[in-house]
Image (tube, rainbow over all chains, first blue to last red; front, side):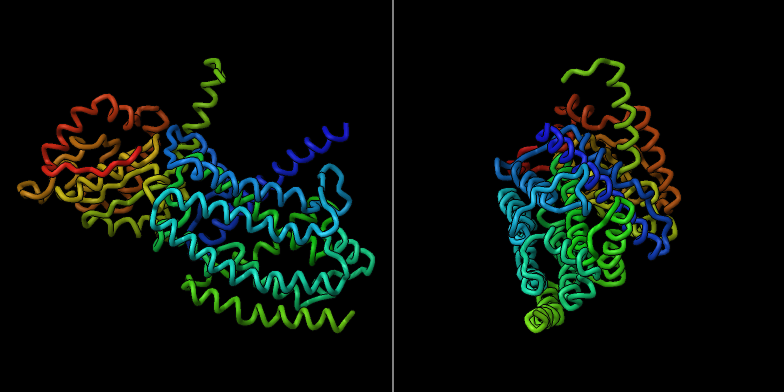
Length: 303
Length: 181
């Protein structure tokens, strides 16, 4: 009986992540349009696009690895989703967490990009190869402040589990946003690169690289990539809400918190042009890394 | 899984709705018509509110937009781009040059009628068509998709020999690279 509840709960979690991620993406397109003084597409436009991509009748492939690239992305998103506590008290949403799942998550979150890199390599498209190298360079950039922020939290609160960090916030009554502010700043600045919106959209830059690793993927492949990106956006936002904003007691609270967090990369992006690769890496190794170092020093000092 | 006809009809209705409200265009900016595309996409006319959006590569695109005259040299690339697109795919011929040659009607180096070489769904006339005309062309394409008569890939497949013969008549050095569609 318990296993059935886990399976149904997993499906419900996935559907929630898909719908919320897609709707947030549509909201982003609307916001960008309004800032550019356009009317913009409807908020549900991403669902129409996804369904259209799914109902394409032909799908060319370039080999086994090309098939598996988008599948790797999807697997990475779904597995990460299963390790994130959606709500504080669980409820219908299962949570496969264990001690040290934060470290596991660090690896799991880059697994999809690496799988996609392999898939993009087999298409033989030079734009894909350039996109992959840019993506790996950018990952080297933002992973450093991100890991520094998480290590600071682990040192400060003596736990490597997400639920442990949520319990700390529940017991002390303050959010980690206030208990370890430098880690929050470093993590948020790193999240700008994680979302890959402007100015860090150097991987899929449409005008330079013809959408980079996705350039040979049409139809159902693109549908898989699009939906896994939506799920992954939800994963990242929920993780940030769990780590820094004390998690959420109910779904409305979760939506408000994740939406406010989502607005940071979106609004930073719409007013910025695109960086070059070395500018992006230099940006991440500048102030975000400084904040990461301060966060670790603060954590060591405060314990 | 085999659907019965009634449920298939519902799926068709949803598919047609999704296809006509999500047209990703690949603007093949050959001639002067390419300059009308930015004004169609940006704030004054804003084609994105109709679901029209630029796609980066042929694999992702639904609509191939031939904006203006096509030289013999670019025809080869257009054919290759068209064959790389994933069905269902649509072609819009843009401007009088694509319809009958326009002001290049006696040129030795341009093709005159686009639909001799690839199946065209909608022509937008004008030299150049203004963004209003472009939007009405997209509206016409949406109507055709709704009626289910925008079946370019099917026509291309059925009359493939005729299209290939026409293409080879123009392109003398026919050395296409190997690629799977």
